[in-house]
Image (cartoon, rainbow, N blue to C red):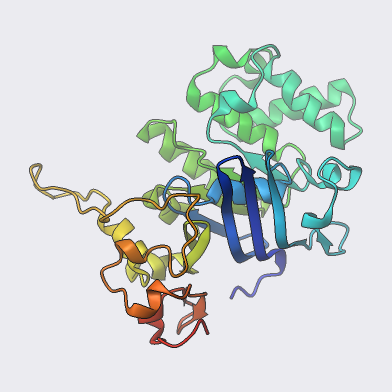
Length: 338
C-alpha cells in the first residue's frame, strides 16, 4: 500500500454487456486503489476487460453495456469523495470531471482526432469546455502544450490537420489534449500499440516526464509487459474480467505468483534465444466470454490446478510483501475463497 494520498478507489466493480447471444461479464468484482502521483499498470490478453474498466471510470461504457455493481470513489473532486458509478453518464457532474480531472488517451489517435479540424481547434474545444480562456490565450497555451509534449515547430503544427502528421506526432497531440486541463488522473489505453519501437520508447519517456513534472496519476493499460515494466509502480494482472494478481511492479515481474502471470512472462521473447527455438505459450484458449465458469476461469489452462479450482472461484488474498493473488494452490487454501 502506498503512503501517498488516495485518488480513486475501485470497489467490487462489475460491468455487464447484455447481448442477444447472452450476457458478457466484462468486468467482475474488480477492486483497485489509485494513489496521487502514482502509476498503476493493468496487463492482460485482449478481451480480459482492461479497456472496459477504463470506459467505466470515464462513464463511457458503450451500450448495451452498463455498470451493474460496485463503486468508483473519486477523491479529487472539490475535496469531497464522489462515487462516479452513481453519476448520470451524461449529466453535468460527470462532465465536470471527465476530460477535466480524469482524462483518457486511446490507443489509436485517429479515433480521438477529427480529420475535419486542425489540432489547435480540437485542443481549444477541450479547453473551452472547462476554462474561461480567450481565443488568444488558448492559442498561446496550446503552443506551449505542443512544445511540452515534444512536438517540433508547435507554432506551425497548431494549424495542421491530423492527416498531415505522423503517427507519433498524432499520439503526442492526443496526449497534449488529455493534459490540457491539467487532470489529476490520466488513463492511457494501449497508447503505444500502433507505434514503432523507437517512437514507443519516446512516448514512454514522455509519460514518465509528465508524471514527474505534473505530478499526475496514471493508469497505463497494455498487453505489453515490457511497456508496463517501464512506467508502472504497481501492476494488476487481469484475466477473464477479474484481477488475478497485483502488487509492486518490481516484485510482480521478478517473481510472479499466479500461473497466468508466470505464463505471460515466459511467453515474452528474450534476447540471446536461438532463432529456431519456439516461444513458450500458455496452453489452451482464452475463455468464451459467454461461458459462466463455476470455478476459476483459468483452471482449464493451469498446470497447478487442484480439484477446488474447478468448483470455486478464488478471490484476491494478501500474501507477504504487499502481494495479492487469486489462486487456491498458491494461497494454500483448498476449502474456500478466504
